[in-house]
Image (cartoon, rainbow, N blue to C red; front, side, top):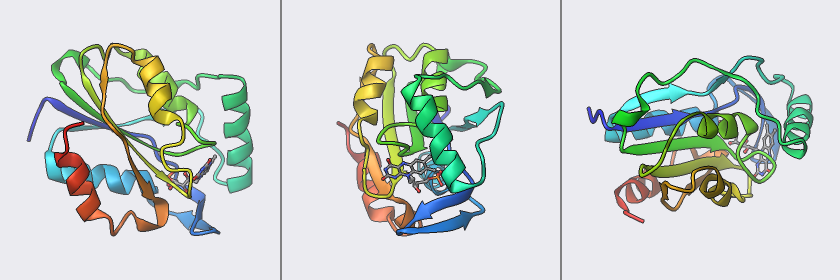
Length: 172
Ligand SMILES: Cc1cc2nc3c(=O)[nH]c(=O)nc-3n(C[C@H](O)[C@H](O)[C@H](O)COP(=O)(O)O)c2cc1C
């Protein structure tokens, strides 16, 4: 276990858009990748959980997410990290929502001081890859070292280990 690594994720169970179809996910795509990363690098896991869960219904969820993005809302999240200062590297994973991160990830990144820490973003998506999430992270965390992100197709989360290893061992 490497106790200087924190692996954070937001992931949405329930109806989702996978391979062009609505599918009911019992475990979210990003959660699958997140746990693989932890099994490779060790470290502590933290799930970003909203006070008010998103709708299970895909259409309702996308509408809510779009409204939150347009209004730049910061949904409340529950739980907290006791001692952020001990971490040097923070992996942060999320689904691509409307070409960036879900707004609770914005809430999370504004809740702690990530100065001088390495941030390694990854996302699952259905075609938009990282979208503008990396540049949004750089705005939220101007004093962090933000590495190049890893986008993984949602339908391939159970397959992409080679690419995942290469990304984990890269240092940019
Ligand atoms: C609210 C919402 C918005 C989405 N917006 C996009 C998008 O803009 N681009 C894209 O490629 N995929 C988009 N997707 C698809 C998700 O990024 C994809 O299904 C992802 O793998 C879901 O991960 P999760 O199961 O961890 O939540 C969206 C999905 C939802 C629910």
